[in-house]
Length: 190
Image 1 (cartoon, helix red, strand yellow):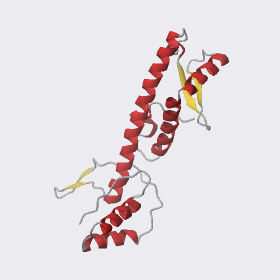
Image 2 (cartoon, helix red, strand yellow; image 1 turned 90 degrees about the vertical axis):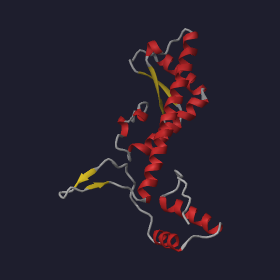
Image 3 (cartoon, one colour; image 1 turned 135 degrees about the vertical axis):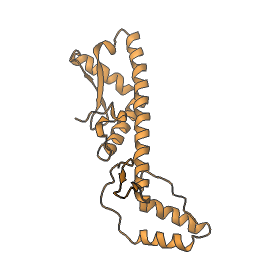
Image 4 (cartoon, helix red, strand yellow; image 1 turned 180 degrees about the vertical axis):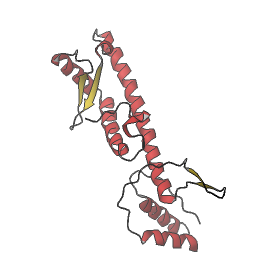
């Protein structure tokens, strides 16, 4: 019997296999081979290292004309799937924040306060509050406070921004592209 392994961002590979194994045992058992493989995995300690994204396009040619291809084992494939899921989520969060920013700009333009002409962005502070910042230095302190208040009134934007920062912090240390990736365009660590 094969195990149905579900990728869960909160579980290590070993923990996910344990969940799948327990479900399979409740639903009729596992075959002898699966049992041996699972017990071997469960008897090893959890890895203490953090998985880092790896290249799968490494083709190696041997002197005798053979070709070696890179391949992932179960744990590496599982961890890479978690990273890929976080990348997709970061992309979605980034695009959602851009849409809200466009809505805010339209709102500001209708009230004779243009964000575009002032090049305003924002940062998320340690408390999860949004703080407007001028990219060109053209905002007065009063305008920064007003834009910050406007940003913080949008609970949807606050929620997305805090979640985006959390996801990006979990991705930057384990991906090859790091802060240069497309999904990291809005993230600038201080």
